[in-house]
Length: 378
Image (tube, rainbow, N blue to C red; front, side):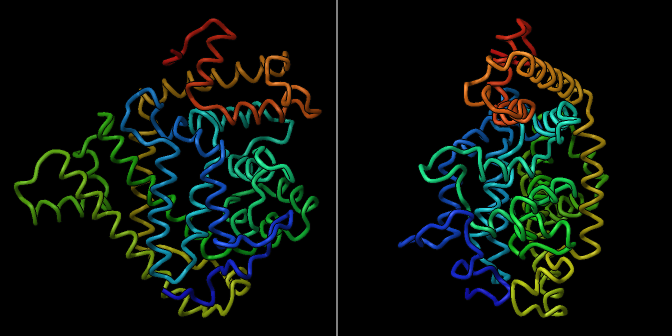
């Protein structure tokens, strides 16, 4: 499908922070995607928590499988809307590179540890990974990704951090948070694909874990309407096939809804360029009815899965691991690798080191340094 005029065009990219010759066999966004896939941070995602810790089951999602699912959904929607699939894929694969071990529990704890030292934002950390923390190239730190990929990675940013980014890179990826403008459509799409993906796979993982049931899910219109539809068409269907087919239909309904609602928004706004997109209100969206159903499902998962006593207990232990590791490295920086220990901003160096850990490495390090085994430290 020919890219629409409002899609990001790799031939018209705003470029990289460190200029490089154009790739001879790939577009700029394909080069970004390939660099992300080959990065150390990307490989670490396979052992980073989504909801359930890696040791809790071989089939639960990790940050890696989540990122792949976001990329798949994003590419499918982008293709229908005439957007740049390669850019969507690059953003999707990189959007969680800065996530800490232990999911949101690790992120929130590290943010508390960094109180008074600039805090910790996982979206900003993902940008730090691709801008400076990866060490792969002789000419520059980071992956030197294109502006459009970096723009999409930085999904959220506080005003204080946006001002710091703007001071370091005038007119760069922090500017839109100060000006109140939007990112390109590919970045907007990844935000919504992220939400669609985690709602669906958290249902699957939640039922697989036994922490929520299909009967409980009947409270949510978005899931139940598709379960009922499944059973009407396949009355003899039982077990996990009912769950899988219901989720499949739910995903398809959301994808089609985003395509229809976004097409309507684009038809009304009629942006003639990427700059026009950035100056418009958000254009990639659910319909109002689907937005409400998605919100209700998200609230159900918060009440019944993310705050389940078993998850809360695991979260408390994960918080302890991060808190105690931070205190140990802050007081004894020589316990970190030399490159981290030698940095002038020690709190940020500690945060970078811990954020880069996988779940199992953090548990092993905590057990080694404290003599206390939490969760599945072996």
